[in-house]
Length: 246
Image (cartoon, rainbow, N blue to C red; front, side):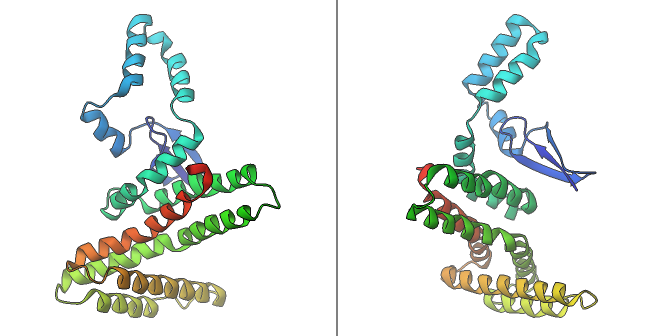
């Protein structure tokens, strides 16, 4: 199981560690909030909180924190913020500054699952728009299934290009697929093996598909970066079409 560490400023998950059971803690600050603090962007609410603490003393800390917790952001604002910052969060993960599994969980918990709830609240059962909205959410959720494996796949492509700069990205994609297929464990149940094989095939097909979209990009690493961001952008674009995020 996992302990999820949430930023005490924006409440997003910024780190995980193995734990007994599932635990959520709200301490520490994520890189984004830390950067804002260092730039002096404390915001009016932070200044107001500090003024109140100065006036009434540290015994009021728990009361102020409770007020702060409930007035910071509404659920819909949190979802919209995650949508608007998804590309930056994904870029941080691709740059090695965050965990792909943390981001996947954040998208699933705070966007996909919340969107499912909002669909039920927004549409009548007979509304044709409900079916379309459910298709959008299902598509976003289907991307999450292979997102971690896709990142690992593209990381392998990067390593090949780093070692052999003259190799074409498309050739590297094919090489990773061949090597990954060869290294699939055989000493597992047949259904497990077939599922892993199918997932790898899906990831490879997506890599080729998204390579074709950005193949005009001259710099190999910029091309790979665009390919890495593509599934996140698809999730963002799809969910942004839902009426409650207008």
